[in-house]
Image (cartoon, rainbow, N blue to C red; front, side):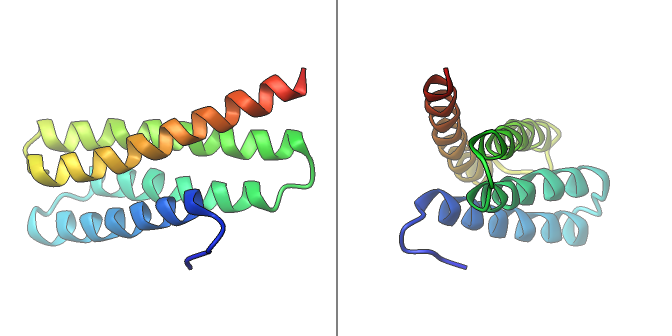
Length: 120
């Protein structure tokens, strides 16, 4: 689901794919079912909310969906830390996923900041 003119949506989709693969690995190899479901939900929700924001019917709707995407991104980073610190995620994979999530979070924060400044 790559779009030429939407790098944020593409980045969030790529992150979601990696999260899906991580969740499958966690359940298959580590028999870890609780945290894997949590990160699967938040990690795939980021992109879903960005897609919804792109179809928003108003600036307020756009801002609300982007805000949810930002919060889901923060939650994803939390679960990544927990998985790493509990020994279920190695440092290399943690660094890759965290870097991608952090980049998306910074972009979302900048969008929210701009959207809210322009609203005033």
